[in-house]
Length: 395
Ligand code: PMP
View 1 (cartoon, helix red, strand yellow):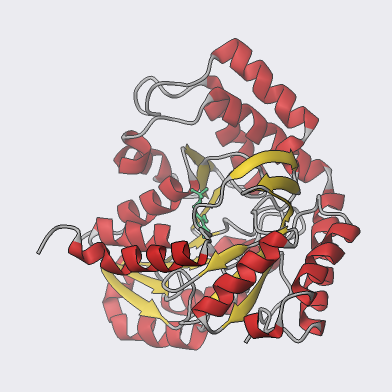
View 2: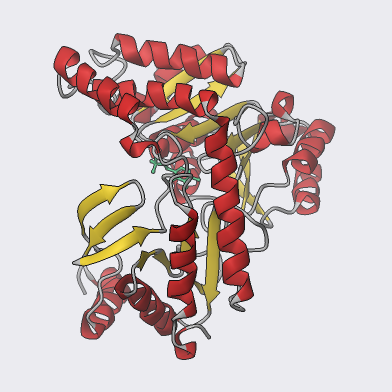
C-alpha cells in the first residue's frame, strides 16, 4: 500500500494514451498565430476548443494597455488584495464591474476559480445549506466542501427538483444558498434561470449564479443569463471570470448586498493569494469596455455558434441540446473519442477531449467552442475536419 495507490486509475489512462501515441491532456501549444490559429504538438490547427469567445486576446488596445501597465506598474503585485496587493487598477476594475452589472458592490479575484470557490466556501459554512445543480463546475464543488455547509444536489437544470428540495428545508431556507451556472461549460446548455428564480421567490434563500461562460454573450448588455432571463433582481451574487470572454485571467463577484464589502475579508481565496498583475487588470478593463462598445462581436459569436452547430448536426453527430458558443459532440466510447480527437488534431482542428468524470455523463465529449474571431471559412474547416472522421471514431 502507498500514497500513490489511489492514482492508479489515472496512471493506467495515461499509459493507455501513451501506447496510442497521444497525450490529449498535455498537448503543447507551441506557437499562437492568432486568436484562432496555433501550432499544437507540431500541427497547425484552428483553435476550436478555447474559451476566447469574443476573440479579444490579440486586440491591439488590450495589448497596448497591458504593455503600458507593465512599464508603469511592473510585472506583479507580489501580495494579496488584503495586504500590499490592492493597486489602483483593481479598485477601478471593481467600480467598472459594479457599473456594468448595475450592482452596488464588486470584488476582483485572482482567478475565476478563486472567485467561485471563495464565494461558495465563505457564504455558507457549518450549519448552513447549499442547494446546487448536480452538474456544477469543480470550483463550485470545491468551495462548498471547504465551507462545510450541508450540500444538497438537485437534478441538472431541473427547477421542479429544486423546488422539491427547497420545500423540504422548511425554516432552514433562511440559511440556504442556491448555486447554479449561466451557460454550462461542458455541453453549453443554459440554466432555466427564469424558473429557478421563480422557485427562489416562492421559497426564499439566496441565489448565486456563476456566469463564467455567459459574460458578454447573453442579455441586452451582455451581462449573462440572469439579464437575458430578466431575473437579475432575484440573483444575489453573480460570479465569473476574466479568462474567457475577456481574454485574460482573474475573477469577480458582484452583488447589491452591502455585506459583500465585509465578507471580502473573510474569503480565504481573496486573502491568501496574490492579486492579479497590473497588466492583466489593464487588459481586462479594456476588454470589458470593448465588450460593451462592440455588440457586433456578440452577433458574430452567435452566427459562428449557429453555423458550427448546424454543420455538426447535419453530419449526424450527437450534438448539445441547444445552440451555444459551446458545441459538444458526444462519443460514447472513450477510445473512439480519443481516436477522433487525434484525427481532428491531425486534420487541423484542436478541440477539447472531455472524459468522465469531467464530462457530466459516462460518455466522452469532443467539446468545441467558437469565437467571434473565427471566420466563416474557419468554421467550415472545423466542420470539414469532423466530416473526415472515420465512422469508426464517432460511434
Ligand atoms: N466556473 C466555471 C463554470 C468554469 O467553467 C470555470 C473555468 N472553466 C471557472 C469557474 C474557473 O475559471 P478560471 O479558469 O478563470 O479560474
